[in-house]
Length: 605
Image (cartoon, rainbow, N blue to C red; front, side):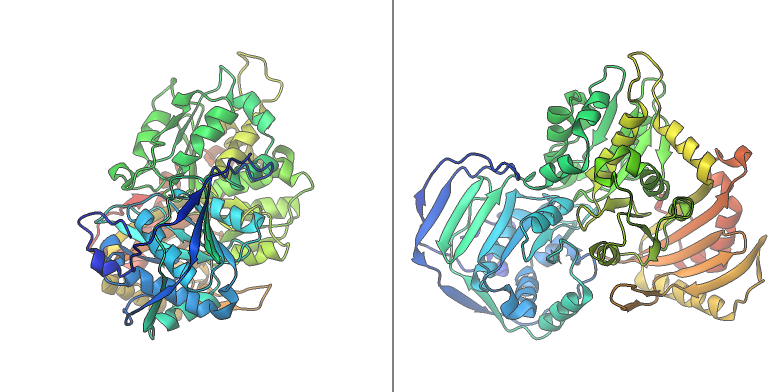
């Protein structure tokens, strides 16, 4: 039977129950040398699986985006909502899914455990041969990508609303990753949506719930569920990418301190093992590592606003740690800080790329190329130009990086929304970014005697700016704006672009061009249009407006501001001061405050 909390109406979830019991047999096993997985038990079922079809009808609003389907939790727990989407996924894949192995896991948020049982019953009912599930249904998004790639799985389902809050009154989400470990391409998400509009039946298998708290295997006739440790495949992969001995030589130093904030989200299942057990950091170096269904009532978005507890620690003066970092709900985003010093995501990916070959063994033979999303600051462009690397500017959405990586064109990539990664997986990877920064620090401090001044995060940033120049960058987020008001602002900006011409003056800035960004994929020739409204000026300054689709309700207006500077006397200016005149022009041009009714943003990055 499906175990649902008392206040969730069981009849609304519509999965059938089973009165039969499995036959159990236990065996002990040693850990797998490569994956580190332990199979503590094998559970078998003597009887054959029976399919118990259940009638349903289409539900509006199940259009799947690049980040999957995200709604309020109450919507997903309503009648057949989750089941309809999952069945539509399996139906869209057709006979291709039969006999395949997929993985399943998520960020630990409210409803994930109950949702897992629904998904397992539908997987068995639709001919899936095996599902590999993270223990307690916990898998960081990059860890799921690693499992798919390492085990050559058909794909995987990830239960997460990313950096959005969790709980009965908050957000829930689900997405499908394909066989390279990347988010599902549009051809699949479009098919899912088509099936949600015509669905009439749910193919549930009549099987009991599987105990996801115990590492091991549950076998039915023709269907298997393997529960693995959340670190399976992912942790060994990180050990291949990075020099853990070099990392330990830094992190275990008595004159080096760090603080990692898991924000009560999924990296809490990974951070203590990596930083404390393996790399020698004291237990006090990690915080908020208990994975909670509501993320401790917080907003698991690693930025200067929502990670305030960590920010306060890092800006506490001389006693602040030397290095600080945080990750988000599903572990794919990151924020990096030095002692009283913030590294913007746009700078972070550029600085990692500039130091990767020297500091990270995985890149010892050099980078294939680099890429960033269009709204991301152009610091990476300058690195690519000086280092002679292939460079790509793509729309927002990790799938665009995946195509480049699969084609051998890109090694390191990033988005200004705190997402950074490489081609070791096909997702953003928060812990990878943190370990990359620690690797740079470790390499720069090799051979330093105890008590000798260490190279800091701030030193690395300033050295980078002196060599490549500085791209001052800021993003203003206006969250939860009424969709009609946000759309009206976008229509206004499109009218401004339509009448704008080269040489027009916007305050003190002279226009080079204005457009709605369009991208042609160099790998498959696909075209992505209307990807962001750009105003680019002759001095390379620019501002950009986009509506974000990562929330569960309303619209988030994002305004991006960037200005390039090489004057040594100005490189250390506060970004908000350096960008003030351009910010004023962007607000005036867009009439954002007038359309949104907001006099200030929700978050400033």
